[in-house]
Length: 592
Image 1 (cartoon, rainbow, N blue to C red):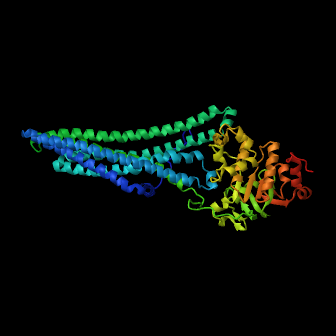
Image 2: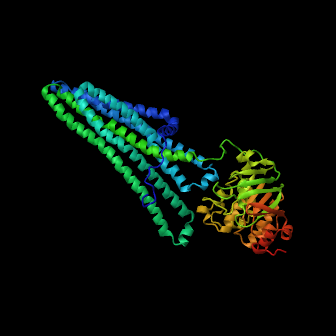
Image 3: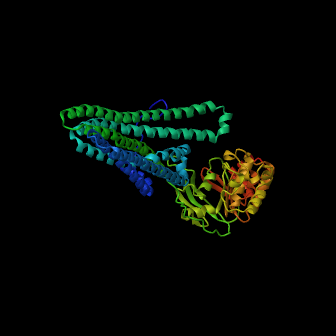
């Protein structure tokens, strides 16, 4: 374990077969475009291979006092045409590479947004963002350039070796001996590049995670005077990324230097031995010149193959992280699934001996919870902190699956509902009333994108937001800031309530939805909720007596169980826990 807390053990990697299968999945939709780019690159390679032969002919003609005009024109044409064709091929491959990255990001984003909450609970958002941004970038080269470079480089290498063998097998033997010797060193280096790259990517993900945490609680960081500490944490992650990036660069430089060394040593060996063979009359001077040109030409295919191997090692590290993200469990909701038309009647809800635990190693949150709520009316859930009230809503929405018993909506197990249809029937106001970055209008219509201006205006009045909109400089088009930072806590809650009402739900779930409202706005919204509950089933988690007393029924929960159900008057008289809660926690109203 090093000073930053990162293990020196190699990070887990996919088996080669799985890596290739994953790479091919990204490559397959673009295979014909890549084939076109590869074909153009191959034509450029053939043009390059013809150049040493043309040079040999030029030297022979000079020695025989023949005209060299035609050979010079041919040589010039080969250079210009080969360069132009390779440039077009390179553009096609680069464009295709960007398309590969775009498709990978779209696919990964679509999958990550459908993750089960259980997966999100044990995964860092910053790490997931890094996989979408940083890791997918490494696919750019490995799915196009590396494949093409390996193919065209390998063909060019073989063709060059064949032509060199035809010219002089002795000099070819010398060349291959040097290349094989130094190439074995390169093979040892490649796994080190992959390990360093994967560790660097993990460190980059840690940077995203730390920054996401700091920006998500920006005011808390400042109020706590924690800027320096958070900066140090980010700097440590950045240093770790730098350390592994430098290590990867070191091994890459070793690989590239080995290629250059192989060519240079081969050149010196061929020049010395070839000169001796020219002096002995075994080969002509033109053959030696052409062989040396082929040797220099060999730099390109060898470099391409080394580059392809390097890119593969880097890409395999990214693929391992992408595949890991793709294997996280998702909900079964698909883009083809559409909510069916909902009947106008309010939804009924029932729990039958429901048990639930967030993780196997944690104590159960629900232990045989049972209750029935008929359509319409307001039901309040009360109880001490940790009693399992909010979890009731999470199970109804199927954010989590009950480990035992049944959760019923309209008499049907929620696991039997199509997920889109189930959630389309509900409006949900979370405890912290999240507001998304963007305009006020975008936040209001987030759950009802087809809402009309008339419907928006009606909801604004109900949620007591109409006066706020009048004060804002751009009205509904005013940008509310990151997580609604330009709005007060009460305004954010009202936006969340308006968003849920605009959805026209059959079942409205409100988790501490008025906790940050002042008395005037709370009373107004209480009246709105009471009015809505005549046509909609409303479930509220509440700690204020002023809200609870409006409920048609109250469910008292304690230690993961339902201990009593009744009206306020019945529970004050018959349940000691509720009587205590009413006397101590619900201080905004006399128990009466």
